Image 1 (cartoon, rainbow, N blue to C red):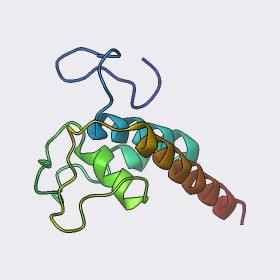
Image 2: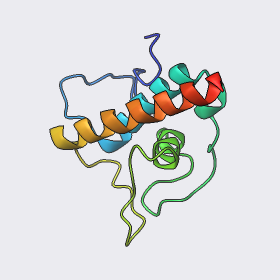
Image 3: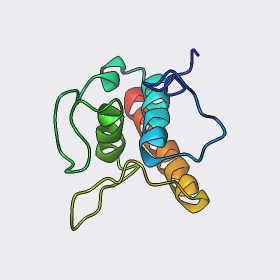
Length: 114
């Protein structure tokens, strides 16, 4: 598929009938931010780093998770630092994530306009 974040998973599947995980949603948001900000470096900015005890730096979703946390769209647990990538995203969380993405995108656009 041509939409960043909507790519096949490592097992070759898309799994549209399954609940959305935090890792999966981070991938979609990273794709959205890459398009909205026209910043292709977001696709690889954190590859190989490790900041979360429950997400390996070589995970297919690591970069997307790091971008989503850096941009304030998603967060890790403040006490443990765990991101919980396989937890399911609730409707309330999705609404919060969408609002953060919209604000983040508008901020970048207005910054670019000077």
